Length: 472
Ligand SMILES: [Zn+2]
Image (tube, rainbow, N blue to C red):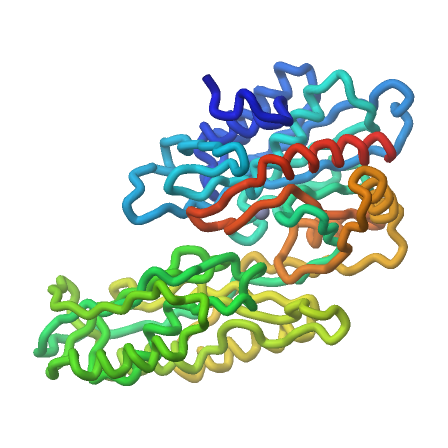
């Protein structure tokens, strides 16, 4: 029996369960894209699948709605693959171990990909239904949203006729998002040299930090493991062999580990620095664990110059919230997250997710990264730049969605702009006059193995979606 068999909304959850059974991490979207194509064929719907694996599926308006303006239903196919250290799920070939406790849907040991599988599931359920009232639908499923919205960016949008877009990639029920930050993925590459150097090899690290999404939780008092460890190493008499932390530019790293060589016994200094680091951690990071242990290494240590330059650079680089919005209380305006720190044989790379709803601030922050990087011998590169989604004063879609919400749930939705990037920025940049709103069912701890989708909220949000479609 299917795990979600007995829960509502039945059809959407059936598709969600199927999606969870198909591996679909970022850059691994061919199978999930083909699944959508098979769905379109089986339902006699026209579709476009491009070479990037983006898929558009079209369905005519239902009776009486044939001539209404088409509506774009949009979500992304890829998910962030994070798992617990002791979890043996292989994201390249295994489906998720889907569970439901009656309140939450989650996946054992891994991310769930409710972000954004639920959007795809809702859209497929709308496309498959014969008992709904809705305008012509263009369901747009993009790939690689989580690694810089690469799919939306590469997509040929001339196939889209709709100028009304419902993006279902928000994770707080009752919040309608109408604007977002623009951003970029910035990478600094610091070449290193290695040489033989006598001394004892140690493994030193920090783990079990909280982590989280760099757009959603950057101001929630979560420490960046790479910055925490770099600060400790900067004060120890060591030569770096390697330092590695995090695996996604948009996830706050939960752990960071270094191999170092030292001619001194590090234990006393480490104990002192650990205490200072622990005292400086935000209250949320009670579970943090620091460790130091003897180790071995096949790689030679970096030269003194390389090692101290890398640590100086890591210490000097800005990280976290840089500015709050003066107009919208509580909105982070500009931030960056050192998401990936990686050591290769001849270089250390540092990859940041940079965000701002003010383009000038984004440019200035990138300029700062470049300047600090260059001063420490690193080269700067950038990818996946995406435009901010600017607030639209006059939005019939927003008005409709607010009043349907009020009618259905007897309360006002919150209308807001967010710091996270949404593909709506790219769509509004490319589709002139686009009226868009982002919404979605309640999820918790996305991009972590604790991700869970609220079941009751998923049912309410489905009802909301079909009520909105009926009014468009
Ligand atoms: Zn998402």
